[in-house]
Length: 136
Image (cartoon, rainbow, N blue to C red; front, side):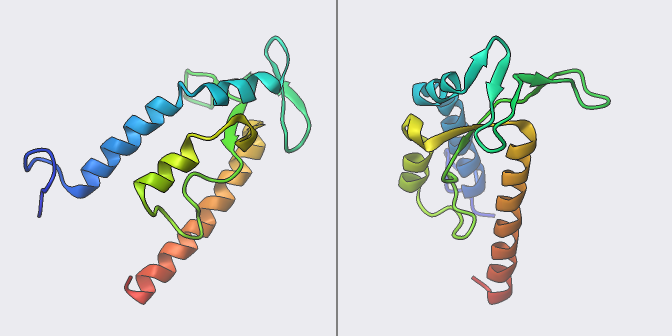
């Protein structure tokens, strides 16, 4: 196994995972994302979902067997960071699509965000299966 990164200790996949994680951590502090969430704020602990237009609580009770409450006001990229039809292309495009201005975000409730995410995952899964079939 070739380990071309980090002094011969990391594979290319490990390096990609490290960079993706660092970018996601930086994105959590991206001000336009917080501003978009502020605009969906109705009152303390209540946000408006831009998809179903329902005013919902900021958090939901934990899932069975879990302790932490779930976020119900999900700040979502309108255009996905990784296009499910194409997949990850370049780091430049990934960064450009991740760090966008507030108009590129929408606040979705947990249910609407789950539906959108699952649709994107299904598209990406079909694309990957076709790529594997074609040997690319």
